[in-house]
Image 1: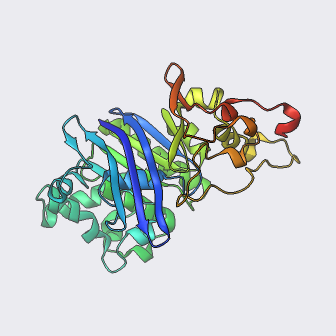
Image 2: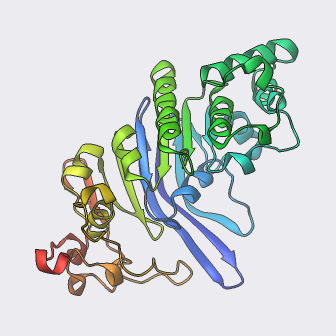
Length: 331
C-alpha cells in the first residue's frame, strides 16, 4: 500500500537547520496497522505530514526520499494537483486536535459534505444523507439534528468522532491517525479505537497510528516503529517489540509505563531531554540519557545504522544501546 524510503525532512530557520526527520524508511500493507511511537518532538507527525504535502514550504523542505503509494505514485514528488486527488479520498488523516482542525465558523454538515462534493461530485440532499449516515456510524446520537450544529456544541470525544467520520466518509485506502485519543478519557478512548478497528475491518483500510501511548499501540497495532531524535531506532512486530525490546530507548519507554510498577514503587522516568535537532549529535543521539544500556559503549563518530538483528526486527546498531546494564544500575 505504501513504501517509504530514506525520507528526510528539514526546516530552515533563523537559528539553523532543524533535522526533523532523517533517513526514515518503512512500509504499510493493506489492512495493517502500523504504530509510530516516541516522545514529543521525535518526528512522528512530521513524517506523516511530509507524505501528504502538509509541510509548510518554506521553512520546511523534503530533502530526500520517496513514498510510493499503491505501487504507482511517489507522494513526495507528486504535484499539488495530484495530491489533491489523493488527500481526503484515497488517504485521509485524523488530526491531533479536533477543535483546531474543525472550522469553528462552519456547521458540521458543511464540513462533512465537502469531501463528497470535491472527490465524488455528490451534492445537496444526497451528500447530506451520506453525511448523516457517517455520523450515525461513528455513534453520534440524533445525527439528523446534530449535523446542523457547530463544532463548539460538541464535547471533545464527539468532535473526535466527527473527525473520524470526515476521514472515513470517502472510504480511504490509507488512514493516518495523529494522536487520535489525546485528551480523551479512557472510556471514550476505547470507543474511538474500537470504531477505527471496526471501520478498518469493514473497508480493509491500512492505518498509521501516531501516538506516545504504548497502551494504545499494544491494543491496536500489528507493527511498531520507534522514533527518537528524527530517526528510527527500532522496528518490529508489536508482539516482538513488547516481549523482546532491544534498543535502550525502547526499553526505557516500556519501563516508563506506570502499570509495569508495583504499588508504591517509584516510577521510572527517562532522565534529561532529547537532543536539539538544530545541532544533532554526530553519534548515538540517546547516549546522554542511556541508563538501561552502557552509555560508555555508544558510538560517537557516526549515526548507528538500522540493521536486522532478528527476523523482521530492525534496531540501531549501537553497542551501548543494545547492551543490558546490570539490574543495580538499571534501577
